[in-house]
Length: 245
Image (cartoon, rainbow, N blue to C red; front, side, top):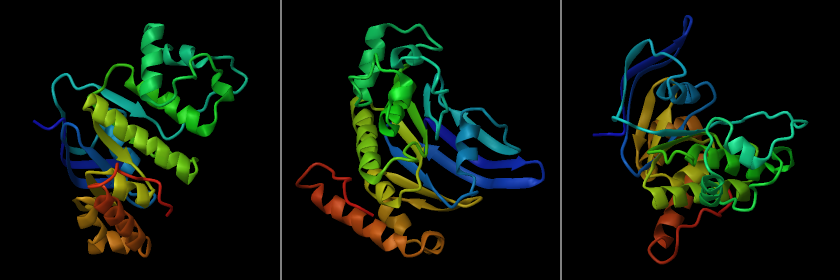
């Protein structure tokens, strides 16, 4: 059974329909990335999966006992609030310090336990959010443009960390990204959304689809070239996500 199975999903805000007829599945251990223009319904889809909004039609079926870790697009913390990373990780659950340290290591931020949240860089902050999402050993990680505001090397490093987490824990990943170069090198499947599913499949299939090209234009060639470059080198070297756009 799929971890997440979405059938004929419709979402509206008042009279404004943002999604209709959406079908999507997420299988164990795979990375699926949702791409699409602003206003295409990407975040609404994730919010429906976590139960934050109620669909007007269709079904979302989660496998029994499914544990979801969620990394939001942004989270504002008052910079004057004195709160350490450890305390932030333990806000909702009194997890042991060792568990906090363990998830920070998994998120690639092993030295931040005693740091103040207000002193973290953008990249460190996102890794702490990732660590918090990993606290309960989720079956699925949901990421809503989790690298927004990071520079390209920072984004590439963050997505490499996500792949490491997937390999270490076996969790599946469903993420939204606007960074096509990352999508093409880091995903097993890509779903192109624009109010409905325009096209989906492997990165190479989606990048060559007319619907995808119509939405993303000339960026497609570069994204596909990077995917092929990474894919060709994957046989000889570890997967590289460092190329520039």
